[in-house]
Amino acid sequence: MRGPINGLKAEMALVEQEHMNEAGYRLSEASPGDFIALLKPRVMSLVVFTAFVGMAMAPGVPNPLLAMIAIAAIAVGAGASGALNMWYDADIDAVMGRTKSRPVPAGLVTPGEALAFGLVLSALSVVTLGLLANLVAGALLAFTIFFYAVVYTIWLKRSTPQNIVIGGAAGALPPVVGWAAVTGTVSIESLILFLIIFLWTPPHFWALALFKSADYERAGIPMLPNVAGHAATKTQIFVYAVLLALSGLLPVWAGFAGLAYGAVATVLGAGFLWYAWRVLRMPEGDQAMKPAKSLFAYSLLYLFVLFTALLAERLAAGLGFGG
Amino acid sequence: MEREFIKPTEAQLKARRRRSVAIALALVAFVIIVYVGSLAKLGPALFERAM
Image 1 (tube, rainbow over the protein chains, first blue to last red):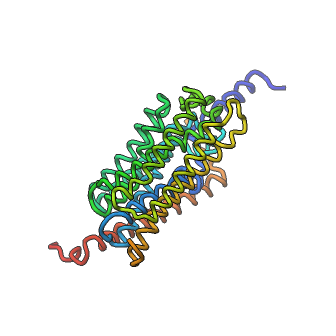
Image 2 (cartoon, each protein chain N blue to C red):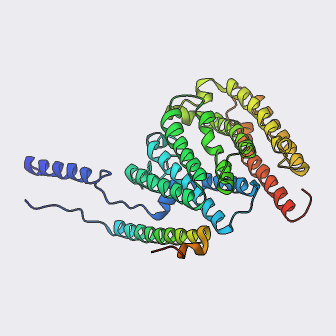
Image 3 (cartoon, rainbow over the protein chains, first blue to last red):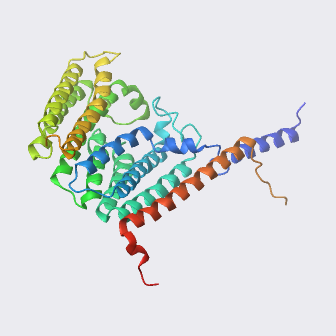
């Protein structure tokens, strides 16, 4: 039988064990792969792609090696902002089905490790881009990381349903950074690429927020469907779809894309409007929300194909086909 | 008073070794990137500076 002294010892041992298991005391079992996951590789791939298109569209031919280093620096900078986001959002990530298995809420990486990892990579990526490309590109990358980690994650995300509208600027900046890495300037062309991604972000995320609204509700994040309701969200998705379809044609209007791109952008824009229209017509109380899921999937395809069309046309022109 | 230390488990030691190797590789890659990038940006002038 357990006596009072033995019981006390057992309790003390338990307290000690719990103390030892606290984040600051326990030894981590995190693998390098867990730290890679902190960088949000899927988001990173989109950032790399759009930044690359920004570089390819810019006038002038950069040194291929320096261009590769610039892309790597932009990718690491984007990943660093993802790590900072996961550090700050660990509490809400833990209660959302979509994010609860991320390294910090899963207990694989401590919040302190994620913060240190994000800060070190931010500094290295900004300094590398600033010194090996130019200071404008470095400053823009620093601003992008600051905007995503501080303005979006810390300030807007939990305070306004316009969080992803304003915060979307961070995700829209990579082509501007890529352009600046080649030219050292910010131009109307790069701002048009920024505008396309900026207008693409709300319908993309609100489509997700519609079918994940219970998740966001549980986490207490004021996404538009949870604050303004599904009907208002669907209307806003459609309005942004119209603006996006029109903005997709701006590269032709501004003269840095041709008719082939214009044709692709028109078809893609019409497709986006069609999917957004189906979301608008989605009945209240629709549990499956297939139109919203379809729009979310299509939005990813839209951005990828649109930027691929820009790139393909530029490459074709470079090889002497048209343009 | 006797000081207490945490005795790492085999899994923790293995994970720490893997992290150390990853950090070493990342640092080597970073040094190479800065060295080669500096050469590409500054060219031969990099070596023609007064000591």
